[in-house]
Length: 238
Image 1: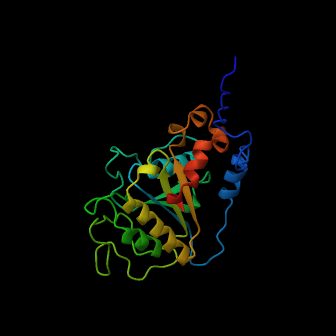
Image 2 (image 1 turned 90 degrees about the vertical axis):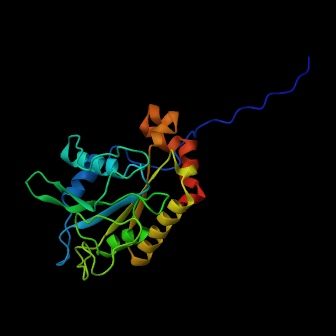
C-alpha cells in the first residue's frame, strides 16, 4: 500500500564542531598568563572590566577565573541573590595572587549590572566613565545620573593605570532572546565606545548548559550544538 514518505528529521547537532578549540591547552595558557610581563612604565596591572545585564553571571565569571589561578573554588566576587537586582553595588577590583606572594599583572573590575529601568542598575555613562578611568575603587553608583567632575568617586585626571585595558561583556544564553531592548542597546553602545577607544573586547555567553541538553551532558560538545550556534548568531549580539 502506498503512503506518504516521512520527511527525515534534521539532526539536532553538527557532526563536526563549528569552532575549533584546544581543550588540552588550559595549563599552557595559565602558565603563559602567570609569566605575562607589561612593558610600560606607567602601567603596573592590566584592568579587565566585566559588565553585563543583571543575573548574566558577571561575578560568577570573575570567581571562575580567580578559581582557575588559585586552584581552588573561591567566592570573592559573591553571586547574585536575585534575578532582578544587581549583586554588585560598588566598583570593585579583584587582584589574583601568584604562588610567590605577588599578584598577577591583571585585575578584574566588577561593576553594577544593567537593568531595564532607569531607577535601578548602572547608568551606561558610568560604564564608559570606568573605561576612561574616571571611577575610583568602591565608588557607589547613581542609576539615574552618571558620575561627573566634582562628584565623590570621580577621578578628574586618570592615569593609564586607572583606565580599562580590556572589556568583557557578559550575556546569558537563557535570557538573550527576551532581554529588554534598552539593555541590549546599552551593551552595544558600550562595546562601540570600547572600539572607538581601541580597547580589546570579548563577549562571554553564560548559562549555555541550561539551554542545551547536549552541552549540559558534556561541556566539550558546546561547538557541536546547533542551539548554541543560533544563540551566538543572533543579530542582537552583533
